[in-house]
Amino acid sequence: MAKINQNYSKLPGSYLFAEIGRKVVQYKAEHPNSGVISLGIGDVTRPLAPSVIAALHKATDEMADSATFRGYAPYEGYEFLRTAIAEGDYKSRGTDISPDEIFVSDGAKSDTGNIGDIFDLSCVVAVCDPVYPVYIDSNAMSGRAGDFRDVWDRIVYMPSVSENGFSPSLPDGHVDLIYLCLPNNPTGTTLNRRELKVWVDYACEHGAVILFDAAYEAFITEEDVPHSVFEIDGAKRCAIEFRSFSKTAGFTGLRCGYTVIPRELEIDGVSIHSLWMRRQSTKFNGTAYIVQRAAEAVFSESGRREIGESIAYYLENAGIIRRGLADCGFEVFGGINAPYIWLKTPGGVSSWEFFDRLLSSAEIVGTPGSGFGPSGEGYFRLTAFGSRENTIEALNRIKTRLSF
Ligand SMILES: *Cc1c(COP(=O)(O)O)cnc(C)c1O
Image 1: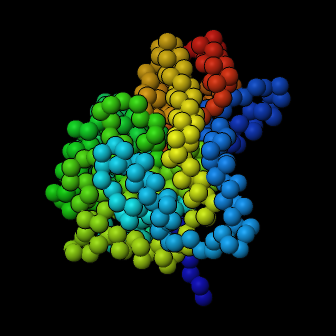
Image 2: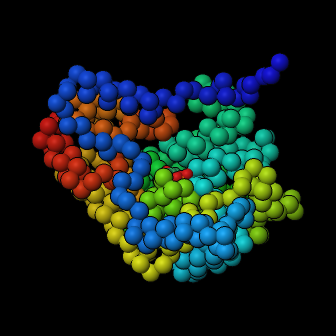
């Protein structure tokens, strides 16, 4: 008889967005004339840039002609895109990453979820808390997280809260794999060069590997915030970096990301780059040609300009939310180097109670911080991915209708 992977039975239900959806449906049913605004989703809303669309059309036409048709793409991505990434995302910022250290994929969720395949099940995993749920759940599925009782008993949670300025302390005990998401989802906060250096030094010294998710790199506005972990000395010996075109260039529906594994990264003399190549060539058959051409267009002069305008639009929304909330007396974080605003719920109300009050009094949907981990309790996430009009209207409602 077949048996299921029992690790899946240990997973708590993916309660967060289902529960939000259920509450919103119920509210709308009870208030048919409501004008609910969602600042809850972590998805972009602006269309793809004209340069990206033009590249998609052109590549699609190539696929219609036997002379230019392409079948399977290389497992690690086309040279044209890996070169564009190495130049546009690294060399332009003074970081030396070679095209053959880059693996193109269908997105950072797959890569951050799959990277555990190449590490031993005995590795101890550390995550910032609150955190993007993929890191913990993917480790739970493979049996590396232990058992779940409120928290996973083999995961080391590193609280990232206002009291420590969202700069978590190094773990007390030994850890092997450290997930860092910077700028962070959900808190919208990040670390400066000096703070990140502490983690790189720790990993190099303890033989740990940093799994660095830089999905929001393009939103960084402050000078002292590193765009890549590889800006920090020593990182090439202890870090893997994940990037995505999803939030950067609106590719959430098109699907493209990439992972950087430096040649220097070895464990016990084994090249991590070779292991990942072996893994990808077995379980992954490449990213669509037309999508890779679309991603290449992101690095063209016009692509860069158009994408910069979209990011500026979202960041202006973030500023409207941040300033609006601060004017109302909220304690707010993030929103400067990220499209997320993280607020402390007033008067010590729980994240879910704040959700209910925001929905019933202002008809605004956000995301309860407790859904991202135990240290998210007492916080709430709003996103800057809405339209300008809705963002302004939402803040007006918070000012006029909400009282604590
Ligand atoms: C949105 C997001 C990603 C991107 O995932 P894709 O699969 O590339 O769309 C990765 N990491 C974090 C933290 C995210 O919020």
